[in-house]
Amino acid sequence: MADREELESVCKRRGFVWQSSEIYGGEAGFYDYGHLGAKLKDNWERSWKEYFLSLGDHYHMIYTPNILPYRVLESSGHVDHFSDILITCKRCGNSHRGDHLLEDITGESAEWMNKDELSDHILEHDVKCPDCGGDLDEPEDFNMMFEVDVGPKGDRKGFLRPETAQGSYMNFPREYRALRKKMPMGLATIGSAFRNEISPRQGVYRLREFRQAELQIFFVPGKHDSVFEARYQELEKKNIKLLRSDWEEQKEVSLDELDDLPVFYRYHLAKIYEFYSEVMELPHDEFRLRELSEEEKAFYNRIHFDVEVHMESLGGWKEVAGLHYRGDHDLGQHQKGSGQKMSIPIDGERLIPHVIELSFGVDRNIWSILDKGYRTGDRDCMKISGSLAPYKVAVFPLVRKDGILDRSIEVYEALKSKFSTFWDKSGSIGKRYARQDEIGTPYCITVDYDTLEDDTVTVREIESTEQIRIPISELSETIESLIKKEKGFSS
Ligand SMILES: [Zn+2]
Image (cartoon, rainbow, N blue to C red; front, side, top):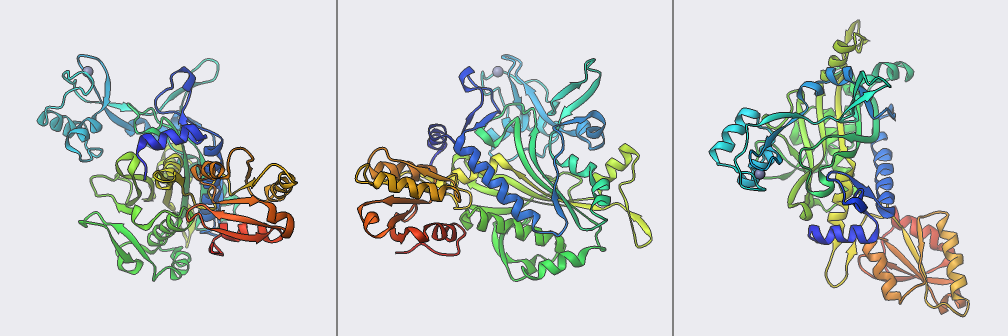
């Protein structure tokens, strides 16, 4: 476990992530990924695609622009409703997010409160400006979208998209035809989204430009249930840990016990749970699924669970993803706004498909991996699942003479075509291990004098620091099955 300062320090020092435009003093809410952060992010996105697209026979990636016309976001409701409550200090003029001001005093979430409720609570708790202690002005709504002028005359108003989902909704009718009317149909996308946060804090947790990975699944309830039911069979007996909105504390239950939730919802909830435990390999007691209460969830979400990870660096349970059953809200709104048919003919009538949305904040997920992975103490170590680690393996020559250096280059060259591999000849072996431990490289290989005799090398595992001896001819195969967890590491 590491605190935020330690984690931020290793992230900067080793090349994971840091504030953008750093040489000019930085700008709050924007972050850069360095060479290791970019590898980790790419690996996470690749794993996300592989895992979630495989959940359906007709789930596909699409890519759509970052800039959306005014009308799109008017129909989606963002123009009127996508706002936070802004409170300005009468004395120093600094802007604050209203719910955060209150949360800092009460320690309880105030995100669900409207302007009037927030105003009452601010008065009741006599909240002052945290910067200067001055009196605060009346709360006002602040739309978080970045407006852009499109075209040379600047008369075409648009916005940087506040979420990636709208691209998938608008493309439903075209893809429905292109995919030859196969349902349930899924349109996923990974890309940037933009929100002009009032006062971004907590590092990459709240950004003004961030990445989302979202999958929108279209189906008509009662018409496509058998597809979900068939898939659900394999999971029925599975246990997942969650916190219902009316429960005092989280507990582990079997999926069958959640029979008030529709099967299609339970299926995806369980699959998301599996992604966190098996792909991201987060410890079971460090993440959970939490149901949002009526007060907390948006009116169009019929069922809403968040995935939360307990992050030491951010002070507790933090949302990293969500599963939203949005009914026919999205396609219905776009049908109304565009005048185009979003409904499909089914059993003699036209019905607007419903949507289940799987929504992941990429940056938050990357941060959760780093938070959960980094441990300081006798040995600083970053434990990242083999499939996500920036480098899978590092190769070291024990010494730089007697042909050992050349032999290590041969081993490196052979591995690097298959895995992201690092080669390091500088410093003591201990120092080289320490450098790889800190960036989460699961396996280190040392070429030594015995290698010249019998063509074997030492492989060391990051977590246990145990070592085994393996013939070079079996190296690539062994590393691969270790990363895929087909095989355990033991001497
Ligand atoms: Zn002030």
